[in-house]
Amino acid sequence: MKNLIVAAALAVGVAIAAPSVVFAGAHSGGGGGGAEEKIKGKVSAVKREGRVVVINGTDVKISKSRTKVKVNGADASRSDIKKGMTCSARHTGGRASRISCK
Image (cartoon, rainbow, N blue to C red; front, top):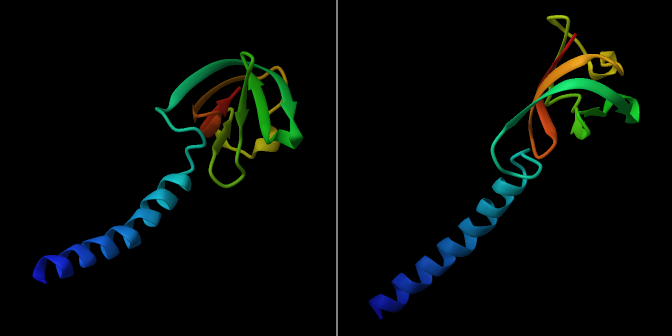
């Protein structure tokens, strides 16, 4: 009887914890997982009003709230990034955590 109670308590604990683990991973903001990558080059295109910039053929998504944007060393917004600028960005799965342009 004691083993049955322990098994039931364990099953309930797993049932409660498992969805939390799944949702925590799904909302981590990584957008593709993996390690953060660095990219540097000229911006060849700006799409969707600055939400996406293309650097060296790679689409880099720029979030209004989650991406730190700098232009010429000063804080800026994604709309300040223009075609032809040289930028370096850190991103995970194409979602930038920071981007700096000149």
